[in-house]
Image (cartoon, rainbow, N blue to C red):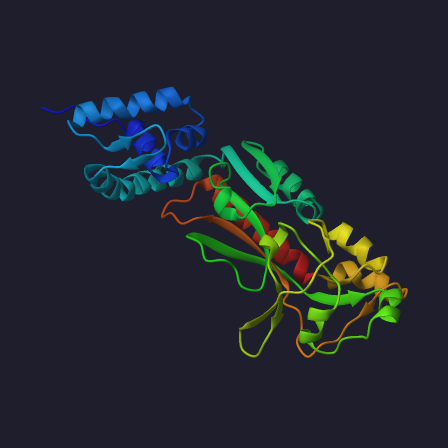
Length: 304
C-alpha cells in the first residue's frame, strides 16, 4: 500500500513545477534548494514514478508529472483557499508579501501608501523592491507587481487590476521650438529629436490614442534616452528634445513658461497603473488585502 502524500510536500512539488526550477521553487518557499529536491525525490519514491526530468541545464515535468500537476494543482488551490478563508475569519492577514514597483515614479507615487498599508496590517511582513524589468521577469521574487505602462499592454498570463490613469502631454522648451518647427502631426516627430526611455515602459515606441480603443505607434528618433521621469523632465527643460510626460508633472513648468504643450492631431496615450498578480484560483489573504487597500486609497483620493 502506498504512503499518503504529505500536503506540504505537494505544495513543494506544485511550486517547483510552476517556477520551472528547484531554485525558483526554493526561493518562493523560502527553503534550501537541497531540501526541496529531497522532498520531491521522496514523493517520487512513494508514488513509484518519476515526476520531474532533471538535467544539468533544465528541469521539466515528465508525462506522469504533468498529469499529476494538472490534477493536484486545483485541489491544492481549493485547500489553500479554505485555509485562507478560515484564517482570515479568525485573524488579520499575516506572512510575507513581496511587492515590486517601478524605479523612479513608483516610490514617489506609492511610498506613503505602502507605509500606510504596513501600519494597517502590522502582521504582514512587507518586502518592497524596485525594478525596470517587465512583470514576466519578476514572478520568482514578487507576489504583486505595481506596473506602469502606456498604450497596449503586453499579453501575459497574469491578472491586471486597473488602479489609475495618468494623462500625458507632449512638451518642448521654447529654446527647442526656436530651432525646430512646431509639429502639428504625429508623423512630423520622426524628423525631430525626442527624449525616450531605455528600459522603462519596456522601451516602447510612443503611442497615441486613435478612434475607438486603438493606438498609433511612432518610433521617434532619440538622441537622449533615460529611465527616469525626472531626468526626462530636466532634459526637456534644457531643450534637448520633445518629451512625453505626465500632465501633472508638467503643469508648473507650463504655467511659468518653461515648457510649451505640443498639440497634435492625436493625443498621447495616458500612463496606466495596474496591480498585476499571477492567475490563480487561490489568492493569499495578504495579497488580497494589499490589492483591496491600494484600490480603496486611490479611489478615495480620486473622490476628494
